[in-house]
Length: 183
Image (cartoon, rainbow, N blue to C red; front, top):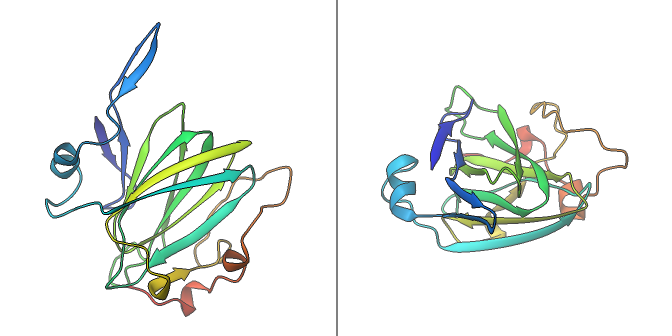
């Protein structure tokens, strides 16, 4: 496993070691001891796995949960490709409001670690995408926040597609960065 830090301290790109031959391939997608030693503090513990399926053009986010239900997320794609975005929402961070974006796909097998204090969103780039992510806290609708995907204060450069983006009603009504409850 190779781990590299992104332009946002704390957000890491993880590339598994893949054993590939004429039969196919094998890789260890998660190992808690290795994850803790290479990425996070020893107290990181995942409590929930989520599986999302989207069609091309679906844009989800920017989502996060406030304290005491804040979540870290380990995101990977098992089918298709996404443009994955993490946004620093920690008011006291010198990177506040900045984002990092990476391509995650079933072919590159990369994963993105997004710690607590960051928002997360993605755009489905292939006909069908399946995204799996582990979270460090349980889902809480009372603590869920959605910032508008196109908030000018975030300046996210989403890829252009031939068709308009598809958003849920919740995502279309997201709040601005200035209105959001932050960390």
